Length: 135
Image (cartoon, rainbow, N blue to C red; front, top):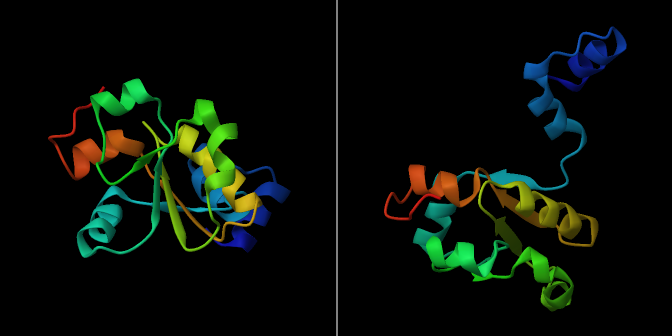
């Protein structure tokens, strides 16, 4: 949907539920989404980027992507100052909600290339590596 199309929907009150994801992308997203398959390709080619898992240690024990650095959201204040806003940063969690919060914060604080793993490790488990347990 184009920006003009969105403006028309809003102007005339014709906003439909199925339009919300595209509206969110146009107006509110400060970061990009990365599909599990796209992330898998980055990892496979050895591309350099910051890869952060913001789930809790107990979740990490159940299922993980080995190359992700565990930085639990519950300890955010302890680790946020250790991150450098240089290069790409990919953030993941279980389904993509907690990581979206971190992505928003990063984008608002000088990080320019921020990506949220769409669907989190749950999508990774179904689309890339079925050996990673679902929970």
